[in-house]
Length: 285
Figure 1: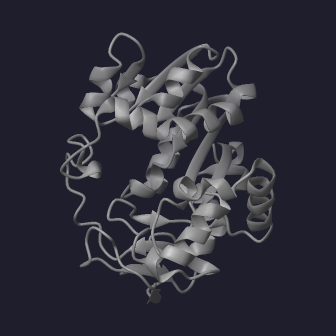
Figure 2: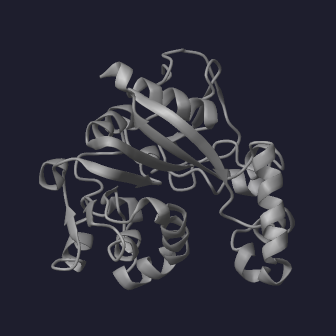
């Protein structure tokens, strides 16, 4: 297979396995470093509309909202200065938790989400649509949190989102990082057998995310490192080879330690998450 970003044919196979589909392999382009699954044939039309991302037993909406609340609040706090009286579009809004917080500050909020049950849950409370045509218009702020790595054509989708930005608007994209310390520093075998998932078709680092955005005709304002999981989580992986350490060993964490550990990982580009701030590239218009 040729690389999605650079069309190079050489790649290496990464250690680990795809936890829910061991027939798939994880490959890394030898030229640009893009990490991808070796096939996307398992993503069929209607997959996401039917909650296929969640497997055979999707979480109830209330449980899903509870599970995402910490990230929803973090994102709201992060973007709060950009929200007042602005038109917000959250693409791939998931359970809708971020929109439910932002609606009290933004001028208007709109979501795009393929899962029918999400639209039904928020019906009459938040405008969530199944497609771009229904969401329409230009938006001052567009967000896509942990969405583009699920898409067969993330470049095309970023380009379309860029077209929906108002003048001086901003697109904020959050993705898991292919340079996660558990993969590239600690090289945890257990984590390498756990983290790769059939729904994550691509994993990006700073360079490949920059390339993707520029190929989509967007200007890269900045790409920031962010660490979602604290030191307790990493120690638990290394000691017990299991997830959930941030809950079971939460007694190890403190705000000061969590901040210092995240800063150390960010300084060497090894956080688990990347956040890109993008704008229209007027020179490409």
